[in-house]
Image (cartoon, rainbow, N blue to C red):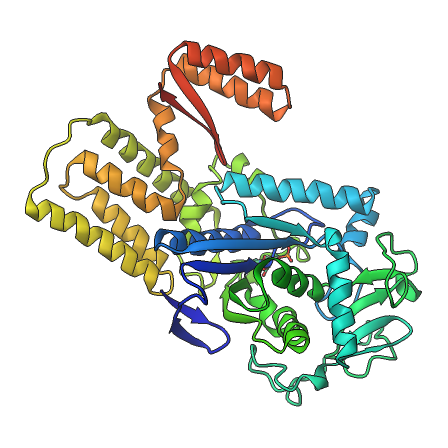
Length: 467
Ligand code: AMP
Ligand code: ZN
């Protein structure tokens, strides 16, 4: 597969270290506010990458963190802790805030049919790992301590800046007078590995014991610690938004490679933003929409996948409701086509010409994915195939095969040909499950089965089929 690597700023041939395995680490959410469409694009892109690799025969092991502590309101150790700030705003505990927004994140991921990572790692459950890693860095002479924090000393890591192509000397010091820097910090590029529970953090409610005193970890250290624990010192692919390039990922590289002496990541893949009126959709700007807003507009959140796939992951998307509505209509059409293909069950032998046509569509689809994930092209090949003169049964097979990558849950279309009475039972059962009413849900399943159907739960709901 050809993949753009931010490390080399080139589209390169991707080969995993130990094929067919691929180690994939994707930076996860900071759970202090609602997951919005910008995040959804990022996780959809991760999911498309992972599904593509699996489709091409690789076996992906995927780890993602959940930042439930330590991410300050800026990436550079300035401001307040986002979680603590979120808690103060709502009158909840930090733990409650993290739980609430993690649940919202996971619900959102299910609605856009994202395959969950093999390991989802909350930072608060990995504090020991982070302490161990900081200790190694301390033994190797990469850290210093001030009254407020333990810092990684960037000047001791000469290749710092390789990812963003910035030379430390050229990097402007963004002195912002309203922000109070730690006076003991030697350089503004040094970054905190551990904050002490003193001064501006004296009331920090999440805190742990450490060799450097009671406190909490800096944000960047969690990704290095968890990536290395679950995937090894050198991994194949690491993803994040383009905002992670200059600080978060530079810092991850520095602290990981300083600790191990090994290359940390072989391919860095960065996704572009979703914007609204020319500005990044973000929690801090308050210009964001969530799946709830999408549903309120009568749009199926799953159609966001189709919307995002229609732009290459390295291009900015300007979000508009009209484009979301158009994607929703496209998804409806695709479902209708799938349902229509299903009605034909008689299979006819394919002529040589048709066999070749089928192979050509498959090859073109694969090639699009192979060329740095050209999903806009893959989607148009899919449409062209559905409109071809191939028999419906073959179109359906290939469509469902493509959908292993696209993730539009077309399998689920089968429910549309199920009698309304059965669908009603299935919907009631889903509602009962949502309320954890498992007795009712079991009873409804039995009724559905007694009527000759089977029901299966899927990330975006359920699938009903004739037995
Ligand atoms: P956060 O929860 O803000 O730390 O963001 C989680 C991930 O979503 C990061 O990789 C960000 O780069 C990405 N992200 C945040 N906002 C957007 C946006 N508007 N468009 C695309 N990706 C975003
Ligand atoms: Zn990260």
